[in-house]
Image (cartoon, rainbow, N blue to C red):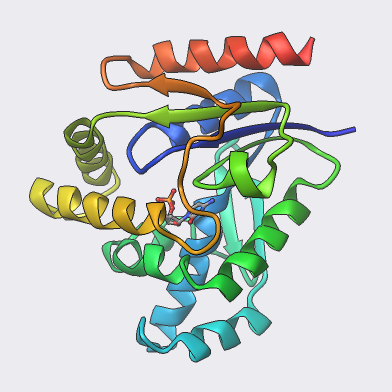
Length: 223
Ligand code: DC
C-alpha cells in the first residue's frame, strides 16, 4: 500500500521547500515533478532545438531516462540519463522555456507516466501543478499552496541569488507571470484548485508555519 501526499500551486509558493523538508522529517519519498519537465527542456537546449520545433522535442522523449535519488544530506538529486543535472535544470535558460515544453501534450503524457512510475508502491510527497487533479486525483492528502504574485517573485528572486542564478526582480516577476498564464491554460494538466484540496494562502506565513499546517494534515490522514 502506498501513501500519496499531493501538493500543487504556482511558482514561488514554497512547494519545493516544504516538500523537501517534510520528506526528510516524515520519511516520505520526494518526487519533484517540475524537474521532469525541466529535464526535457534541458535536452531540447542541449540539442539546439527551438521551442517551436515540437516534433523534435517529442522525438527526444525516446531517449530520456529520468531518475531521482537522495544525496548524503538527504537532498534530492535529479538524474537525466544517469547524469546529475540538479543544478543545470534550474538555469535561466531552462526556466524560460520549461512551461512551453510542458504544454506539449505528448511530453505531458510521457512525464506523467514517469512520475507515476517513480511513485509506484511508495509513500511519497509530490509537488507540481496537476498532481491533485490529474496525476494522483485520489491522493491521500491534497493541498493547494498559493501566495500573492509579488511575494512569490520576491521569494524566487532571493532563492535564485542563493543559488547563483543572475536574474533581476523584474525578470523573475515577468517569468512568473508568463509561466502562471501558460500553466493555467494547458490542454491537459492545467493548474487549478481541486475541489477536495486544502487551500493554503502562504503570503503572510513563514516556511515553518506552512510546514506545520501541511504536517498536521498529513498526520491526520496517516494515523
Ligand atoms: O515547479 P517548477 O518551476 O520546477 O516547474 C517547471 C514547469 O513545469 C512549470 O512552469 C510548470 C511545469 N509543470 C507542470 O506543468 N506540471 C507539473 N506537475 C509540474 C511542473
